[in-house]
Structures are given as structure tokens and as C-alpha cells.
Length: 344
Image 1 (tube, rainbow, N blue to C red):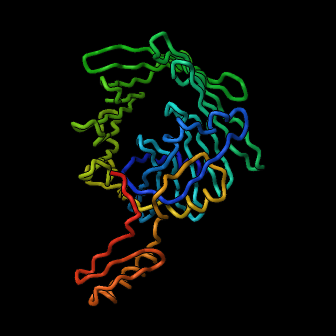
Image 2: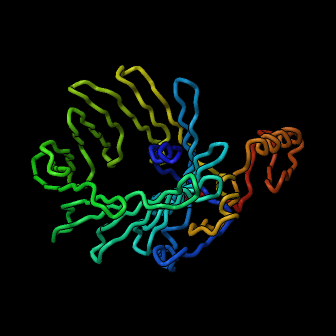
Image 3: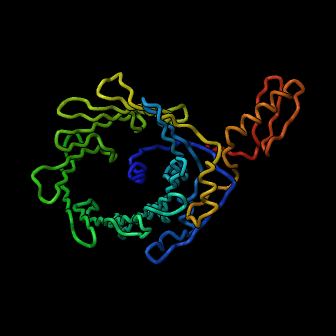
């Protein structure tokens, strides 16, 4: 299913501008009451920057995803830009905790997740619902989490149709390398291991013969991860950052260090993607888009503007095309409307 493909895509943030649009929504029912935005929650649900990531593989297939982020760097909107775009929105409470995720296909919600927390701020529940082929929304699974007095997770219970289907227990060991968390499922002899550094970043994860290792730069940004099976590297992912500190490229290699499986290019957008604008105008959404920006200008409009600038460059005239002001000089440089803002 397409939603499985959607959730498999890993993406990161970069600084962008935002469009001149504002949308607010409402809680759909009592179970989703946490989504009605208090003034304290609005900053966490306000898009202030947009990026687009284009992933290309050796077969020439492109996967394009646009993302909107709040000022804290959390994802608020994702747009999988197919012929029929898939829109996902993320809602946060006044403490910046994720409380709901909605995914829409053709304007209809087909996946919904809800999160609950205790008084200490620990996540205690995750409910996952999906729409059937008949258009009925059903609860697919529910996870419940238990913590010790120090706020460290000790157990996760999985339910389907209110029936306990799996139980994971967690234990910790502090080593010279870091904190190793052992996960045991339903009393199995085999266990999964994850080692974290002092900042809570994973250093490696181990499941059976597979181990994933993570590498970071001096600023704590992940620069590389690789999967090792029985001592042999299976694949490796490199992330390249620009001068502004944001990721601009991601390269996936296969078993051969020179075998490039796919490359992802990450660009800064000058406004919201049209698919999101069209969707938001037709929906009651909890997402707020900050003021002071325009919708992303389509490429064909950009070309029209550039052509107009070329035609009048010799005279140094000012041309306005579809609201986009272009100052043309001998150097043929274009200046966008001064109302456009960019997040520093």
C-alpha cells in the first residue's frame, strides 16, 4: 500500500520561506480534543520553512517529497508529490509533544495516529487507525508504554482488537561505550540491542546478525550510517550539509563502496508547494502557515518572468509578471518582491 511506502521515507529539515496563508482547524471528537490549538500550542503547529527532497535511483525513477517545519525544526507537513499527492500533517500540544498524525490521499484521510502522555511527559499510548477499502476507519493496533521511577521505558505492550499480541521488555546497562538498551520480545532468548551516547543519540543498533552503525560530526549531525551483516557491509548512507548547516544531499551506496543506489537532493523552497495550498484550502486542518510569504512560483511562471527580464534588460526597466516584481539591469539580475521573507 502507498502509506507503507510513505512511512518508509526518511527526511530532514532545512531553512525555507513560507506562504501568505493561514489555516486553523478543530478537534474532530473527544478523542482528538488535544488537537484544538491553544495559543501556547500554535508555535509548534506553525509552518515557517519548506524544503523539497528529490530521490533518484539508477532506474531513473524520482520520488519527490516536500516538507514544512516549525521553528523548532519539527515536521508539521509532508507532501508526497505523486500524480495524486499524499498529504500528512503532524499536530503538537503546548509542550511541543506530538499528539496526532493524519495522512490524506485524494483529500480523504486514510491513516490516523494518536499519542497520549502522562503527567511526567512520557508517552504512554500510541493508537494507529486506517481506512479500509470500504471506507471504514478501523483501529489497526495500539501500543502502551510503561516507565520506571526515573522515566525510563521498561515495557511496551502491543494490542490488536483489544487483544494483547506482543510484549517487549527493556533493560539497560551502562558501559564505557555508552548506554546499551536490551529489548526482549515475549521472553525470546534472542534480544535486540541499541547503544546510545550521553546525548541520547544511537551509536549502533543490533538485531541478530545485522548491525547498523551511526557516525556524527562535531555538531552532532549524522553524517553516515551503514548496515553490516555477518561482518560484511550491506549498504551505507552519507549525508552532506551546506554552509547554512542544513542537509543538501543524501547518497545511498550498495555493498560496493562505489555502487550508488540512489541520490537525494534537498532544496530550499520559496513558498508552500501548490499541492499543499490546494489541500489546505479544502480542509479543516490544525496546521497554521505563517504570514508574509507567497505560494511557490511554478517553474513555467519563473521562466516567463526570466524571459520578460531578458527582453527589457537593455533599458533597465521594471517588469511585473503575475505579481512578481523583477528589476532588470544590464546584469539581468532579478529581484523578488521585497515582502518575501526568509527564515534566518
